[in-house]
Each structure stands twice: as structure tokens, then as C-alpha cells.
Image (cartoon, rainbow, N blue to C red; front, side, top):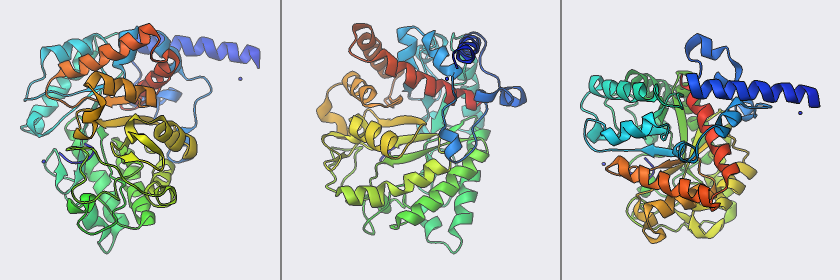
Length: 401
């Protein structure tokens, strides 16, 4: 996860009709997959680089989001978690009701590749009877080195790759290896690579060998190579932890407690955010925000709860058009921000498309969902922004086929 866990008028009218029909088809019959799906324009993965984030003139996913109930609209933002080897009935029920975007898996969910393949097959089958039939986002942290939920590739840590004689080749190999490993387990989203630029040997991200380098250009180049290779092999990549945890000292772990990084604006933009330009150019599909507070950007809220960071810095300044995702809403860094429901609502208002509710039971995800749907019903959360987030998430789900 995040820190560490051992339009002319007539033509426009025609396009709108096509969009509505396509959206309705996606909701009722699912999106295309395989060769057929790839031939259907917006359902196919976009090319890498700037074109990967160029919005379609009239996206069918925007129309599809209009057909969702408020609870389903809220559900498109929820990534659930559970404890043990078998998914609870409550999770299957949420999926069948169209109130889930995906599931994150940890070591306690996995006994073997065959076992987790069976679990994921069962979860994906459940969504086939859902009003939202796009494939679920099945994800884990397969960074390499110490942070791996599955045995096998990538075995080298980012630090070892960065210090090697041929780092770019090894970064590409790590991306390809991660994709093959996750695909074999039926997971199609990897919460990697880490793009944090460490400052001091042995500091927070360097201690666990989770940074390629203290040089932002090197981090950007190797992170971009990992992203391109992994996504080219069919697994979506997540760049994290925006705007960067590289300045965190050894004892500044956002999983455990609040962290404030007094990094200057020039350093944040010139060092920490620099690798994200390379990641966006490589076509990265998701960006995860940090739970640290950055006073240079927002003195009051952690990055993942801050519109100034997500909307202005990531989307506005850097031009990211993909899907934003939070780190775990259960993190110790958020203990001063109320219940999971309140945290989820704050993150959604800040611009987080996906909310990672990685507790021990799906009921926690359901509680956040109900908070969002209630806020939508009462007008305390923008329906327009919720539909925009749902459209981005549905488009992402369609790409995994």
C-alpha cells in the first residue's frame, strides 16, 4: 500500500446518442474484452504518453455514470478489503449490487497462486450479475524487494535496481515480471511503482529500499520504464505517493501517525513531483496520494484530503487525467480526522476517485459508501464530480477486460 505494511450541433447530437447507447450497453451487458473489446475505441487501452490522458470527445462512460443510482455511484469509488482466505458474503453482495470498484489483497488473503486465482474468479463472476458489469479492479502492492504480496517477480528492490550497472533494463524487467506474476493470479492493478525521491541514506523510504535514487531524473526515468513495461504487459500501474515521501525521516511513517514535511515549494516541485511528469508521459493509469501534510501546498490537510494537492497540483499543474486513489483510510496519519466515513467523504471532496478502505472487514467499505451516498442525496457532495469520478473509474475498469 502506501507507506509500508510487513463539439457542430448535429454532429454533437449524434455523438451524444451514441454515448448514451454505449453507456447503457456497458451497464447492462458489460464492456467488450479481448480482441472484440479492443476494437471498440474507448474500451481499448489508450496509447502511452500524452495521448493516454487526452479525453475522448464524448466518453460513453460519462453517459454510463448517469444511469447509476446514488449508492452505485458511491460504490464506484470503494476498494474493499477483508481478512482471511475466503471473501465474506457481504462483499459478494456489494459486488452483485454494483456497489464496488474493486478489492485489495494482502498476505493474509493469499495461501497460493491457485487459491487467490479461485477467489478472484469467484469475485469477478459475482459482478456478472451486477448492473455494473465492468471487470473489478483486483489489486495489491507488488513493488519488489521487501514489499511483495506474492512470491516471485519483481524480486529486486527499487534501490538495488537504481544502484545496478543497467538500471533501465532491470526496471523494465521488473515491470514485465510484476505484470506476469499478477496476471497469473488474475490481478490487473499493481500499486507500484514508488516514485519517492529519498534524501538521506537510511531515511523512511530508503530504509526499506523503496526508492530508485536521490536524483529525481533517475527516479522518473526508471519509474517510467517500470510503468511502460508493466502496462504493456497488461497490468495497470500506480505511481505513489504524490507529491512525495522522499523527505520523510526514518520515524515518519504515515501508517503509524501524523507526518508533516516542511519541504519548500521549489523542492517539492523540482524534486518530489518531477518523477510524476515522466510517469504521466509514460501513460500511468493511477496516482496514489500521500497522507503527509505539506504546508507549502496545504498547511491544514494531508495531501490525500486536499483539493489543493489533488486538483490544483496533480491535475491542474501536472495535467494528470487518470484515476486518483487514496492510501489506506485506516492509516494512523488520519487519526485526527474522525471516522472512516468522514475521512472518505473528505477525500472524495478533495478529488480522490478511488478510496482504499483496507481494514479487516468489507463492512468498513460499506460504511464509507453509505456516507458518500447520503452526502450525495443531501447535496453535501457534488453529484457532477461523483459522476466524473465514476466515469474515470468505469473507463479504467473497461481497460482490464
